[in-house]
Length: 321
Image 1: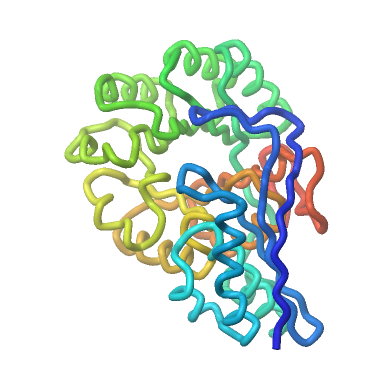
Image 2: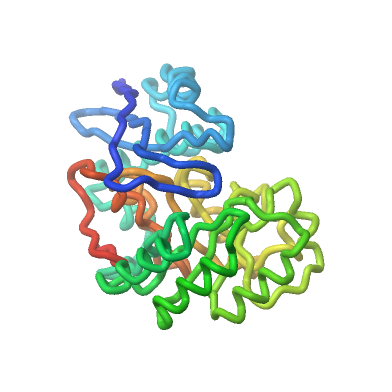
């Protein structure tokens, strides 16, 4: 028999995290521990209101399958016990961690992933005035970041982006609108970003408006985030997106994330790996995907005033493994 433990944590941020959907001052996570024969697997998730999730709802979902988990349900069974989402992610990652310990391996070894010694991660520039965002971008560049993810809402697009590009002329920039734009004016905005040598635009439109991207000619790649959760999302993305952003909290864990990555690559999509505001526990579970992606956006723990131990080692723009 196993022992299941579910609990919540709140981790304060050192700086407010401002995106089109609002401002965050702390990361609220749910942690799952599954103990068996003296070994303990741990998983973490970040419930996301955008997907109808809360701390309470996620903990209730996990508790609802407590008996099955304590009786030995494995990762394959879990895929049928819970739907894709944060709750299944925390459990799936705890089971991966437990299985890795049983095998005497690291989690990436168990997933047959060959990791580099360092991963370039995006550092996020949150929403502010054009000057604030340009100064933030320059400060990150000066500290070593070479890949910057710029958060935008529906205002001051040109002013913000021109100021940022002037501040960091050599940085690789990717832009995330978090569903804040609409089809009117999208072509002009895409051309502006292309002219500023932006490498990719992430989720410009609400997922419900994806049809506007059908046969939409655009001069830079567009990446699906809120529009892509699992392999079931892929048929609706064809002809609309060139990239997908894989996040374990959307796929419902590493098991489906690996399957999504394989299927998406087979269909010609380029991959990005993202995260929510989280601790190193959540990033560690996603590491097996890093060799497969063009862009890794794994800076969630770098926003925390303090990280969960054992913490991964970050420098600005780099994750050391």
